[in-house]
Amino acid sequence: MSTYDVAVIGSGPGGYVAAIRCAQLGMKTAIIEKYSTLGGTCLNVGCIPSKALLDSSHHYDDAIRHFEEHGIEIPGEVKLNLEKMMERKSSVVSQTCDGVKFLMDKNKIDVIEGVGSFKDKTHINIEKDGKTQTIEAKKTIIATGSKPANLPFIDLDKERVITSTEALKLKEVPKHMIVIGGGVIGLELGQVYRRLGAEVTVVEFLDRIIPTMDSALSKELQKVLKKQGIKFHTSTKVKSVERNGDEIIVKADDKKDKEIELKGDYCLVSVGRRPYTDGLNADAAGVEIDERGMVKVNEHLQTNIDNIYAIGDVIRGAMLAHKAEEEGTFVAETMAGQKPHINYNLIPGVVYTWPEVAAVGKTEEQLKEEGVKYKEGKFPMRALGRSRASGDIDGLIKILADEKTDEVLGVHMIGARTADLIAEAVTAMEFRASAEDIARMSHAHPTYAEAVKEAALAATENRALHI
Image (cartoon, helix red, strand yellow):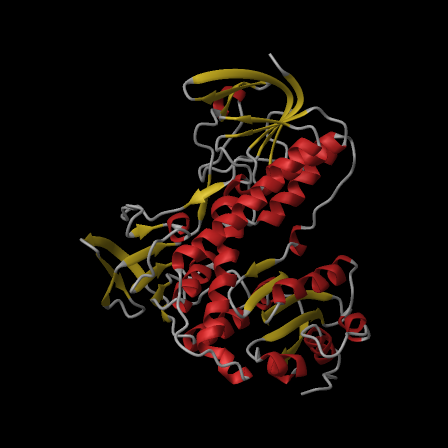
């Protein structure tokens, strides 16, 4: 029987980063993965393939709608080759997963393929093709991630009524895709297929899309996506989803309790994700799981069993790849006797639509609820020379700062490249910067980042220069 200092169950961003950091700290490490490729949901059927399709569809959309205004004329018809687009996506996924395998080899981490389940708190059974091997691990990190959630009355046939996994490998562009759920995944994939020619309708139970983000971002994103042709039904409760041949019929009650009926050829169910612990046999190790299926952990991400930890989507908090990575590093360093920290308030959230949406810190709604007195600075992207030069004039940047101390409490962005710009806000807030600190930093001209400076100036005695 092989014995390890640490075994990591799951090879997503949390799991493989945890394994790498454990190995760097001198621990003999194994990583257990039930699929034949490493990288978990994010690399295989999540972050990476969806971004590949978002970028490819963006190029296509630019070619058929926007190149002419830049003086680029394409004689003849611009044609979509969906099969080739999907092949490119698969190639990007393959290269990225191969990169993780290289990192495992480089750090001398044993990769064991199969379904890992606890035999007891220090032994893990790994089953593959009907055969079982057992390893001993002094410590274990549960990093089994999440799966798409569903509504109890919806039958996911994975052909016409689909999850994000199937939406990433369709062989045709839908005529009309009905998206249930106005969160990150539904909007990103909805925009992909809208660009490729599908009619797209989003149905959201709450009163706005991306409901966990600042309402200013929700309002602006919905306005922009409407201009792009996506239709929305907010405050609308889905009652049934039925398939009749190639037709999908969705019935729902709108905000006035009036029944509406939507017909399409595909329905993407995008109502969030659930922690995945199926087959883990956590009971055998004595690990507690709550009523929502999440592994219970303390502030050290330790379960009730002292040698077993859990990270990522399978525990509380936002289901984000970079949150899982931070937790993987945190646990490895904690086990090594170090004193790491994670400021969960400063883990950014991003929506990779175009324009992109990004945020960190408190929303305006949260500050109001907490009774915090704050001031606000806003700056529209259309006022930037860089935005006019590229044609990306939609969006804004909003900075919320403490009324007395001027410390930045939240930064909320929608616009070109805000997924990258948000790192400036995270850095500033990690060092407890004031709005004035950001306002006095030199930002290169012309750049999108100048909007951050201008929003900080607006929050500092309304000193914005270019509006």
